[in-house]
Length: 160
Image (cartoon, rainbow, N blue to C red; front, side):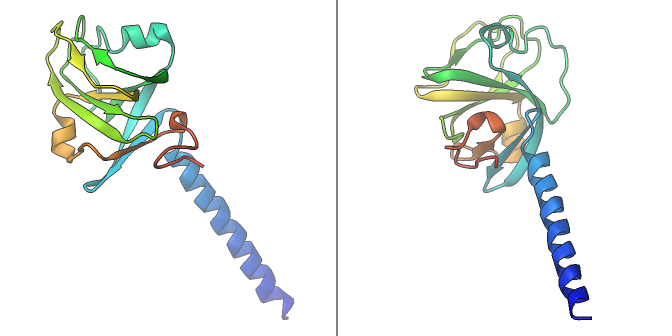
């Protein structure tokens, strides 16, 4: 009789570990990114642009994008990140983040087809592009944190 409750507790603990592990895995998938901040959190379905060709093309020629979708640009090393909107047909918010995934600068409502340089600053390793105006509507601000497997173990909010 005494063995039954222990077995039940062990089974319950294993079940909780499996369920908790599933929740963590769901939050940290290559096709999903979470922004954490004082506003709470927002999850985006993302395409990762981590090769020179995909970064160069970005969201050019995209005519519409689902509300909670975007593109995560991942660079090989921290750098001055500059963008423009050549051949980009939709307004975008650009969230520039450092190597730990901390948002350092937000450029809101980049104008479609505008070739003016958008400067995200020095030391940028990640840029998240989302639909224009969404950062403001959600309350995303500098100091908020990106969570994604590409950010790695030194992330302010790591994926384990």
